[in-house]
Length: 323
Length: 246
Image 1 (cartoon, rainbow over the protein chains, first blue to last red):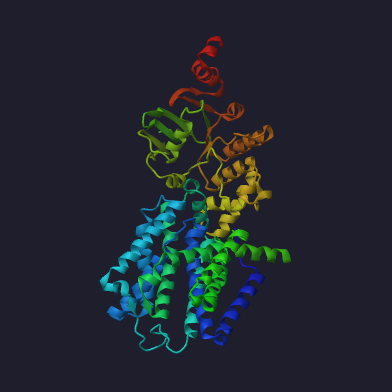
Image 2 (cartoon, rainbow over the protein chains, first blue to last red; image 1 turned 180 degrees about the vertical axis):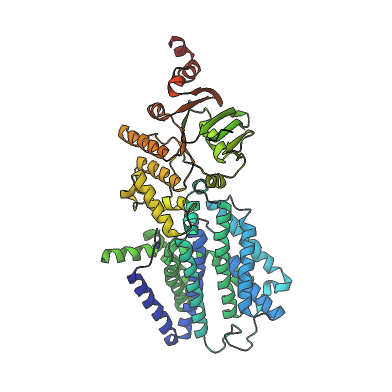
């Protein structure tokens, strides 16, 4: 298992260097570069969250967009209707997502593999269609978040993308800390036992139903946080852009191709896939030929052919060979 | 009540539709005792195992452990109480090392990860797998996997260990080692129930043997007694051979 045990000095040094770069670089990037960085962090965070249920516990969710959307809608709705700060909406959205996750996770307790995946798609589609027809939250028109007065307290920044960069990086670090904590604790061991088989987990004294719910709820909470951030960043949300299967699939891709069941794999996956997708769209996408999607598809094919366990595995192998 | 009585199975029956898997089976296991359950294929041994460990719920009868009625308990709570089993088809967690597999069992009894690791290392030293603790569980040989399964169970500090065909498919040397290990486990005061086809092991290990056939209990006694039992010979060899046996 990768990422277990204490961090070595070398790992700490590398992590520190990466962190320093992440703090120093953004002011020198173009606005589009900053935008790509923000999107990368959003998907990295969602990938890390997916990994906790999909990678560790083996529950392949293709419905993460529902939690992403619930996070965005909760904070936006509370802000527009009751003038509640998006920071409170952030936590409220996380909690609602976790409750919804438990409510849908419980009846799915015995579903594994493909069957769980199918159920998760159905769930996310139900949520999307419901929001699409729900007048109170703007139905298909969605919600527009007013610009208002910028500043950290209001979670809105009108003049620069830079604060968004740093906020999402902090969110991502938080998600990584949660991911690592889970991975190295009793919960992580139990999740992996559940992934192997429900029977062996039960024999080892694991309450399978309860621990599966833990995995789903933690994952939903973190994904929901990313959703609230996205709403405050884009300032406009609607079901067609927030809750589609395409977003769920993108989250799975980021985690799987980066390296499921590793702490940092999803970050690597996002750092490759998201910039590639954004820049190819910027360069050739406007021609309306779908050429950017062809390139993107080719990249995914190449990674899945040569590194089915994820790019992170290749990186750790390289590091080991150096020694 | 008998103070050394650990497991008390009272008239357990289990049917799958019209199929009689277990019918009115009763037996007892005392602390520190080794009981073997034998019988031809399809006799209901595994079903009985499942009924005791909570994977099946019996249609009739009760299972008592230390006087507690655990008949309809869930498997994980039965494990917590001190009844731990292994599977006929060896099950280990494949993307973990041997040590991590044992640790997963140890979280039941210890809180801090450090304590869990120390305890798991002790268990592996006891079962003789210490040299392979960092091997990936999937890479272990069949006999080492079975040994690992026992180690995982021991990390849960059971009072009753239930082994489902832990000797199947072992070479004669491995078989001897496994018998040795089970004896060693017993010296810790742990009672053991084994389902076994390997008669060599059954004869050598068991204090008592329970024989099932077609879901019914047909004999119980010391190993010597049951192999001389007419019903047992009939069940294994059929009527024709039964006639020529003494």
